[in-house]
Amino acid sequence: MRGKCSVEFMSQSVSRRVREFHRLFPDYQPTPLQSLRQLAKKVNVDKIWIKDESFRFGLNAFKVLGGSYAIGVYLSKLIGVDEGDFSFELLKSQEYKEKVGNLTFITATDGNHGRGVAWSAKVFGQEAVVFMPKGSSKYRINNIKKENAEVVVTNEYYDETVKIAANFARENNGVLIQDTAWKGYVEIPTLIMQGYSTLIDEIMEDLEKQGESLPTHVFLQAGVGSLAAAIQGYLITRFGDNRPLTVIIEPHNAACLYKSVKKGDKKPHSVKGSLSTIMAGLACGKPNILALEVLRDYADFFVSCSDEIAAKGMRVLGNPLVNDPKVISGESGAVGLGLLIEILENKLFSGFKEKMNLTEDSRILVISTEGDTDPDHYRNVVWDGKYPSR
Image: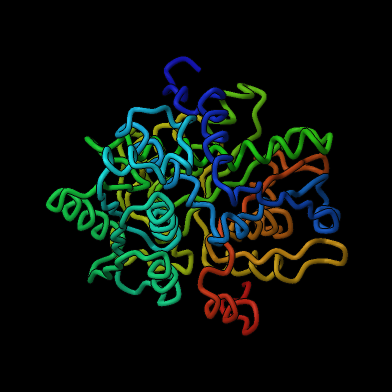
């Protein structure tokens, strides 16, 4: 690992601390890890597991893990306690109210992260303002408003909306809780990435309880790359050179990590334009600079793919083979499984399959990061066949 960036910020001691923090929430439960046994047989691999994040705190997506931890740590520092000692009894105390006062947490989002920040702010007795890019789903907007947050839809795409949120926070004495890092803004994004470690820690705990071996491959979708890098860092610090192979997946029109790694100059490179894709949660043109370092140094494969791949994953998960569980997965959540099936079954990608060492002994983990966060669009794909496989 000489010359590679440090991933100690995702160490096992950090992951344990984060997991204990999330256990403080009354509604905390690990989300299901499902085994797609019949699908694995059909595509001739040993195992396919899928982590279903649609059950996370009733919010239909994983993102709340990061926002809640970042806000929790921020508040803990204000009142001078360790986040491990933070409690909901403390939130109701006069001491908390006097030391913290009234805060407003600010963020930009395509939907899931903003809902998680709004929910967390409400739980902690604070306010939230959430900026969303033009064209955002009305359903996602309304779900954020239901968490008592103010929602501002801009006339810009995602990356410019992030700038607007950052400026608003600075000018209005707000606290920016953004899930991407740039020069001069790394502390909160680091906490958010650490918050995501609960997800992969739950997976490893489930596999151990079931007596299962470590996955050989992990398919990780990426927008700015925060989740993918968090999981990558966890796997490195826990398993070292024995870790699974990792495959990083982005939409064709928003493949900023793919572009940055391909350039080979160790600099972040942006993707311009509308970033048009049905994978709204992955429609990000600028990589998280911390995530890029981790993924550039440790990830094994980078893939950009079309919307049809995500749509196929949605249909397969929603219409499983007999005895396999049904998983309701949104556009950004299903792309990992869609890509896996495409590589395994499409002869055009036989060379890629061989390079990835996908064999009958492979044990593959995919993560459904969201449920049907836009139900109308979900039905357009699954019921009406929008974005058919080519």
